[in-house]
Amino acid sequence: MINQKTAPVQTPLVIQAIVTESFKSSISLVAPSGYKIDPERVIKLVKMAADKAPALYGCDPKSFMYAVVAACQLGLEINGPLGECYLVPFGKDCVLVIGYRGIIGLMHRTGLIKSISAYCVYEKDAFEIEYGTTPRISHMPYIAGEPGEIIGVYAVVTLPDDATQFDYMRISEVLAIKNRSKSKSNGPWVTDFDMMAKKTVVKRLSKYLPMSEQSAAAIAIQADNLIESGQTLPVDIDIDKVMADDEEYADYTESEEAK
Image (cartoon, rainbow, N blue to C red):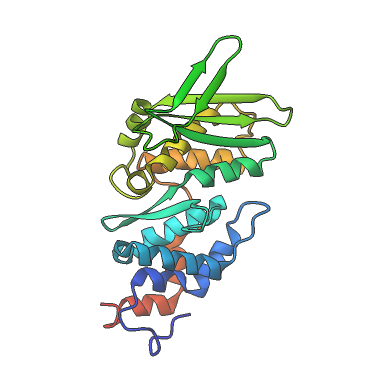
């Protein structure tokens, strides 16, 4: 709980909001089956994310808490070493953006695939794709220098019976999806375009895989579609109630220090 007498000077409200005991206990309860949340690690990673993108400190605390809860509910680590998901500021709103490794990590957790990978295709690569009765992809990356611009992206999945499936997207198809995204001008679409392109083709390939609609991966893909389109992602706790239940946080928001 917050101690007003010892609270750091000018501590951002978004940080004060997530260090309360009521918030920490809430995120401990929303994890998907088989995934354990360490609230202290969540807070540490969230603070690191805000340090890297200081505009997050100016976000509305409620939207900030909401994004953190959504990540925990999906079983994804914010700003972790694997890049599973990110917090991105849009004016006063904080938005959760799911990364490529977040999606494939959840697909692996289903136990319904043996392996999955995605690759970008560049202008100077030797690349062939064939559909029909015997579909195949042949890709030899250009390694003698700069490979040129990205011209496409594809994903390949191996199922438990060693059967394989793949999907390929032209760069124009990827850009069309990027341009419909709320985060098209900010966050990983700008800083890690190749990873977001890979995520896009993996999501499309997932439609042909034997995943339950209730699996963590399917839920995360549905969530990502909502997020990318700017819609609200449902969460399992009442953020307003969590904020109201923490009297010291409520007092702090009215203090001269917070103002």
